Image (tube, rainbow, N blue to C red; front, side):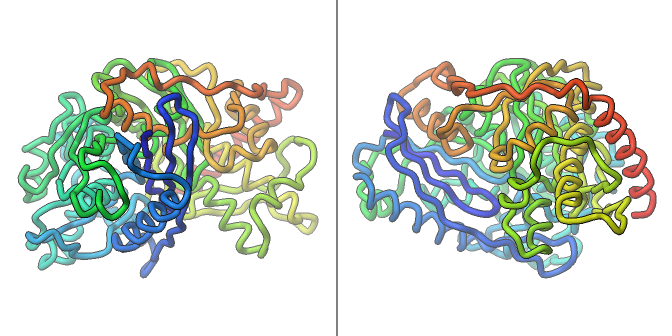
Length: 479
């Protein structure tokens, strides 16, 4: 058997599969975000460990772990987790959707070295500007930092005692030479850091370490249980959905929103604000447009109405053309295509007749319009996208998927029920690391149905998107 552990922003999921990839057991544990100041987003790494313990205990209540030969890890990207010389955490981890390092990121991005080596804009949510922020605002902690780990890699350290990361997650730090798949001494030096403060790198499908003896004994794992390199959450989701070849991609309606396309070659285009990262498999890369608030925007709106998000999305009736109400989902800034950490969300076009239905529709449409921005940015790089697989919690809403198909103007494939996300992806990587299996075990899920754009609503959604773009430009000017 093989165990996948996916450390998300709102929870940690564990999934155990057999060698035929059927699911044996699963469990989840919730996580909360701390927002001590405007634009800040943090989590205590001890909370990740507590969630991991809860998940392992819940899984062990379902199955014996002595048959597990490989473990894969995936997780939220970009989080800066600084450790001192003893391996103790120096401060809460600064997460992917934290924008405090906007000024530091802007100063770094002016230097062409960053884009030319990393292949990406230095976004405020990436890891390097967070350490630059620490250097300026928390110098005592910066000076004490002997190792910087990404969230899933902190769990690896707890499980194995080893400091290791892998290419897909490391590409989101701004310190990786993404084409060469290695840390850049020049970029580290520009932050006043060096390679000794970075974990060792492996490919996602490679073995990174084995479990510590006390961890193996506590839960009954075999002593030689292998922990794979794993992947950042989106690359892991792609492996889970079998999207590993050039041109294959997904649209994700998770906490954030993503348009993801796999590539066989390194083809950066940082001027588009498209992310170009290593894939979880050797000699493969991917492009990604990122919307910081997707299902998170619906969850925020549901809290305002004291309602359940799935209830709001499930009571909209038949698909209709966009109305006057327009929502721009920039609750914590935005990445693709505007790279603006200061911009904030807005409703426009509200009137006396605006009600729960019209505003909920506006929220779903606004996220879809933002994802269209990402799709257009990817297309600007020359990558052709003709269809996408839908993943993420928001993809359970048929109404939202219908809106997406109309806004993006391409078919959306909806997988049949079952596991196909990041937890499955990292379990598959654990299988590759433990058995030497090739990437072809990452098969695509059975497609239950394909949602086509509604031709008669096409012009209305195009007009809605054009209005969104004009509003986005005006709103950015006000931020």
